[in-house]
Image 1 (cartoon, rainbow, N blue to C red):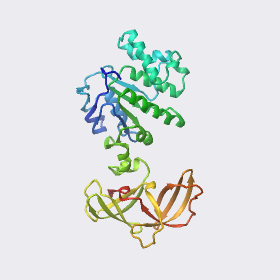
Image 2: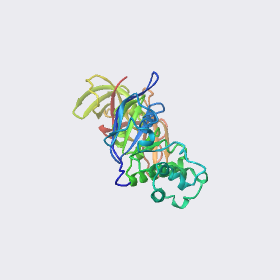
Image 3: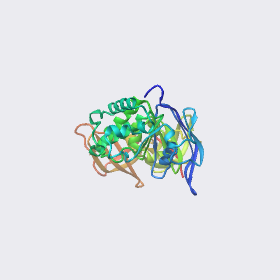
Image 4: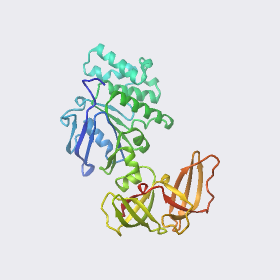
Length: 367
């Protein structure tokens, strides 16, 4: 990225968008730092693609503003926003060579031919496609086409790069390689980037921060580790990763710690204090991920453990996965590292279960 066109901060300020009577984006505010890669994550219809199209200028939001650097760009057409886009289907020109595709935006802007040739060469070197500069794009693999599309988007030195489900057309075996590659290229270019995805592993693995959306609302905007370990809402807890859900009553809160009495089995678990204020005695939902549960050899009288029995066990390579049933019949999943030679526990084996730490248990108000 040249000094004249560095990646710029991007601000979405209180964006609202309606399609007729349907509210697609509901007062979303995001501040993306210069050079940051942010993932817009959520299920279909959550508003993530609408937000991307608003930044690109393909649709005009109902209210709110879009700012790149210190400049509001709402009144600019797409071709004047200094935004690069990689579409879901890459949208390459099949009658043009790789080099011609990469240089298309530069030619459209009237860039000096010598400067354009050098820029195309630089971009093809960045995406490791220089040796295929004269090949027709229809002769390329899916991963190679993706690199060409990325080089074309970066060639115009955008202040913001938009990636719309860029890996959906790739085989699963190629996706991880391309995620790593695009992350490397984005870091090298220093371009502020928004990526739209419904794939949580993709978002958590690539992004500096993740914006989780549901029904047009922003549920959480945090680092991937925070989204996974400290979900802000019950929706985030359920959408990102896998979690066991147990009902109970809040016994009390002391600073960052809370105590919850589980309805199933009466176990008393320590938990992280809920984000929303709740009174003692409130009905709550306790959520803990399978990898944050441990089988315990404690006696049935230990109030910190929950009784259950093994229903099914599977050895999955380096991991043992057990599905357990509590006394009331509620299923619980538990995963743990597998040491060499160890096997899953037999069906009907009685066990005691506890969370690895209070921080592993998230509490939410019961619906």
